[in-house]
Length: 300
Ligand SMILES: [Zn+2]
Image 1 (cartoon, rainbow, N blue to C red):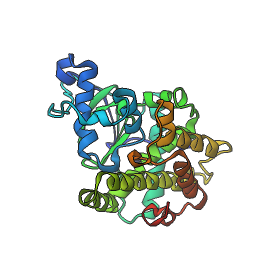
Image 2: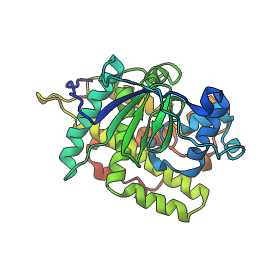
Image 3: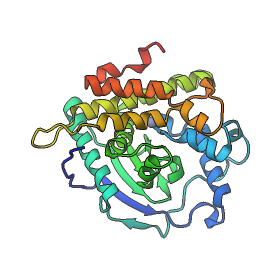
C-alpha cells in the first residue's frame, strides 16, 4: 500500500500496558475469561466487537455455549493504575496503522458532512476502553461509547502467522473495518441495530450482527477503493486486494470454527462466513460506494 505519513494529534494515543490488571494480576487466564464475559454476553460493545470474539470463544471457551456459565460479576475494567503510556505511532506497525487511520479521515470526511473522527488507541496486552477491558486476545475492536478504535499491533503478527494473512493490506483492512463501525455509529445504524436486537431473539440478534460486520467489511473496501495519497496516487497497489481478501477469508466464522475443530453452526455466526466477508469487502472495493453496502436489505 502507498500511504502518506499521518501526523498524529490528540486523536491517537498509545495507552501502553495497563497496570494492575484483573484480580490484581492473580487472575491469569481465569481473570481474562471472567473479564470478558460481560462483554461477550451483554452486547455492551454492540457491533463494535470485532473479528475475533469468535476465535476467542473457541480458543478460550471451546465453543461458545460455555460462555454462558460462570462469573460475570467481576468488574471488567482493567486497572490502568501504573500503566505506562507510550508514544503513538512510534513503531513500524503503529506507524502503518496511524497512516491507514489518517487516510480513513480523508475518505470519510469527503463522504460525510461534519464527519467526526474516531480516536485510535494502541494498547499492549491489556488496558481499558470506554467499553470496559481491552484485551489483546479480543483482537482489535471499536468502542461506540468513546468512539475509539482499540488495537494491540501484536494482532498484525497473529494475522500473518496464525491466520495466514500477511501483508500491509491485510492489516489495513482490519483498521478500516473498525473505522467502518465508527461510520455505523455516527450514522445511527448501530443504534437502530441495537434496538432491533433487543426486541428479537438471540439468533435474530446474531443475524443482525452479521449484517453489521459485513457492512463494516464493505466500508473497509470503500475506503480502500477511494483512498489516495496527497499526490493523487491510489493507495492500493498490485496484490493488495488479494491480501485483503485473504484476511477476510481467514476470519470468516465458518473458517474459524473449522480451524478450531468445530462444525460450523450458522445460527451462532456473528461476523459472517468467509464467503460473505469476501463478497462484501469486494463489493466495497469494486464500487467505492457506501450505498452499495446496504447489507440490511440484501438477501442472503
Ligand atoms: Zn467488526
